[in-house]
Amino acid sequence: MLERAVDTKWARLIEELELAQVIEDQGYVDISAEQFKSLDLEIRLMTKIDHSHQRPRVFEELDVNILTLGRSLWRVGRFETQTHLPEFNPPSSQVKVKAIPNFVQSLDPSYLTSEAGVLNAAQLAGIVDDFLEGEYLQTVSGRMSSGDFSFQLAERGGTTSEIFVSKAQIEIDAGYESPSNLALFEAKISGATDFCTRQLYYPFRVWSARLPHKPVRTVYVSYANQFLDLFEFEFKLPNLYSSSQLIRKQRYTLGSDLPSSEEVDRLSDRVTPATPPRDRGKFIPFPQADSFERVMDLVGFITAGPKSDVQIIEKYGFVRRQADYYPNAAAYLGLVRKTPSYDGEKVWTSTPEGRRLMSLPMRERSLAIAELLFSVQPIAETFQVWKRLGEQPSRDWVVQQLHSSPYAVQENGEKLGATTISRRASTVISWASWLVNLRS
Image 1 (tube, rainbow, N blue to C red):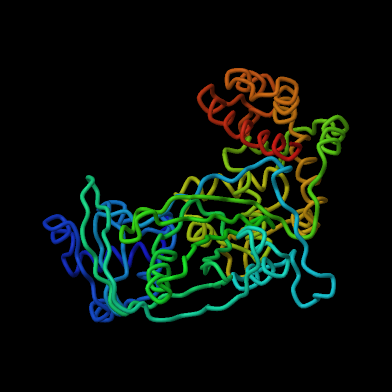
Image 2: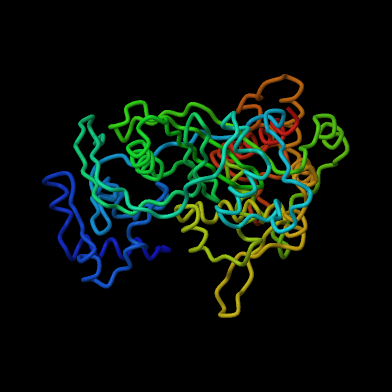
């Protein structure tokens, strides 16, 4: 089984310092920078866990998370540190299209590779002002000290404990201020399903104390597949870490309209089903990957440079089988492939078609992706029935369509088993849903 460096190093630290029993006895343990250094462990690698899928395997086994207490002190315990992000797959009519000014040539909106670039583009395109519903100027950003404060933290089982933070390092990606409030932004180039609440909560506490008469707002920005998803959270109880509530969200894209429903419908009528793909004479089994947006995000990740299985696992937090599922789904569409690297290790690389597709503006890319999906008979049929009924076809119907199609085959051409076909039906529904939302 492939293991990440963070998995093996945390397992070693827990074992050598005999921390598992301490956690069992008191529910948490505090770890200092000196303890990390005593085992020659890189502190940033060990403590930067921004999403739940980045948790070390031993954290999952012990049911613990990590929280920063100070510049050189962390607490590992049975508490919840993450905020969940709702799945964002709205109809295309609900996606707002914004463009940066034509004279800006130093920032390519189709190639944003850093959080700073994403936020610069968002401000230039008017996304910040649109989302916050006002006129804002960028003010604070960068690393700073948290000072001293305390808060209540929810633990497993419904209890809470008091946490004291002293001079922890915080980082603000961008702060925007208006006469009425200050909005603090945390941005990630990722399609993650959650984030560490600390990234918004600590800056919120710091600036609420510094500006006691001006409300402080907190916004999380996720950038993937040329979409910017903005989420505003409010801490209903400022002294309770786990009191964040989502109060608004909006999806944006930069500088390119999405296809109209008429364009999508014409494409669906024009594309004829392709034959099931093969590789070296063998059938490529129908994929299992229920998040189509993650499939396309992965294509972009691989297009930026060859990626190993370990790199994909570290990026997305996939378990071993998912590390195969999602690249294989992209390979099924002809967008990536596995090839030997210079050192003999096999890595995932983008195909010429994958590179071409990822270079297209949003509208043309969306139509190109739709054409690929419409060429897969069960997906096209599910889309057509979904459109005609105005609602998702039953799962049993989708299972039957997949079963009777030439796509439900193993590498040797034999039919997939009933259980496998039922699981693959989830992928058919998910990918057809992407098409339905595209035309809405």
